Image (cartoon, rainbow, N blue to C red; front, side, top):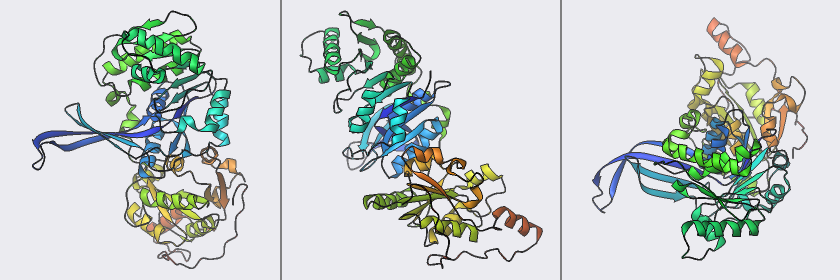
Length: 498
């Protein structure tokens, strides 16, 4: 297998809320659920990408659309924990969410929120190259617009990789020439407008053949739930692939089927072999407990990418509002990041220079847990609540995000800044290639840049001097708050900055 396996489609935030029911609501005869736990996971195309990434030695990339809200940020964190490379398109509106309320393993209610589908933005050149170089592509359509994006459709039609198309009744037709389409039974019946009255297998076969001809697809596999799948290809006789007996939560079984078939085709399997493998894997998935047990441990344990904080300029809502406003006005979003433990003049100079590059500056701040993991158990000296408030008080900072991961990659995939800024002490190689975030920024056409840094300022040195009883004239006793005097700093330049 050469190149990554690429999943394209709509991603939702799925949340399973587990609780107990011991009484009815006094003003309405409905059960009252006392929440005990909840689990978040990427849904839709995101779940298919997580399943594909769980296969050993497979590089998986997801092309999807995320909104500038907390739901989009949470999805970014979950995908990063699963090892999925996220190529996020801008999304107008809100990130869709599906909440299942459960008691004793049974779903009491599903609550959908996020409203009507928003319009996904244009893919970057990096996304188009990704599709051209893919080992295989899975289009996981959930009817919210990504599969209909014109530039993506053109790239999907042009790729030489095998394409698996998992359709949705509200979505567009598959691009011509896909190797395999995988509708479920009801989708095939609705998409093909199959007449009622025929037997189940006849209806599925007619629907599959109609879709295969209409979409110019190599093959169509109609999934039949616990009865397996029916595969129609160039021959006149369909292939029925029975499934082993399995009972359990079927949520995500279709995504597991499509992801498994895509991985098999990427390895060079025949379509019939890929469908047989997919049926066996989906059945084992259901029998093993479904999505509750199938998610990789890092995804189940992933904490939110953004930690809540106080203040009008701290947290996901604040950052999302600032970024959305600047983008709507056609402005430039700038971001930078770090621990900012004992904020000093070097930090302030970097932040002031970064703010001059665009129309807003979002600071990605390592949480206390993240700092301790990077620098040891005695750090940070200043807790994240105080660090975030000090940063937000600076007139050059528009919003602060606090993240738990060792790197800001998940937060960046959500924010999608036009420019990522680092202080001059990172410029050891004299170019963008020295910054580890450069590859992330390239996914949406962003740029990385280094700005001047004041020499002689180091948090580590300050802490060491304080512990030894020495003082320093360069120490900041306190940080000037909003409205602090901005010292003149050279305006940095970088290709692609505006």
